[in-house]
Image (spheres, helix red, strand yellow):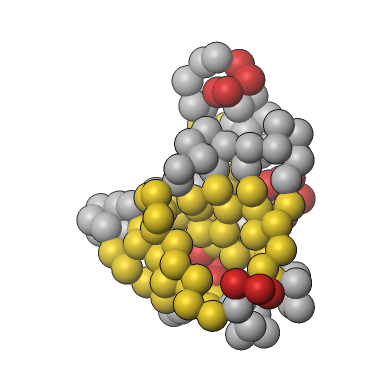
Length: 141
């Protein structure tokens, strides 16, 4: 899990949506968020740069959800309901991708996932991005 950019393929659960993504920093930017929506969704995400998500199949199967300021756009497969990616509120030119949708990657591949303080979003607080904590996965023996 290096710190360089990489291109990966992924899709939703039912296969209606397939995409290719260029990740900024490969998998090094993995994170979660504490905002009301992310807390309930529970996804682990990685960042992708501007134009980094290219829908290869099923663009018409994607639906979007916006809330609060309406800046962030969260995309879901309208058939199976799986969240695939979103345009970020802090930088609408960037995306974040659900790691569970990437081929061969699982959220449980990461022993520690930083959790960002989305309750006190920098665009609301005027302060810097803050770490709220770290989520740890310890496999059973």
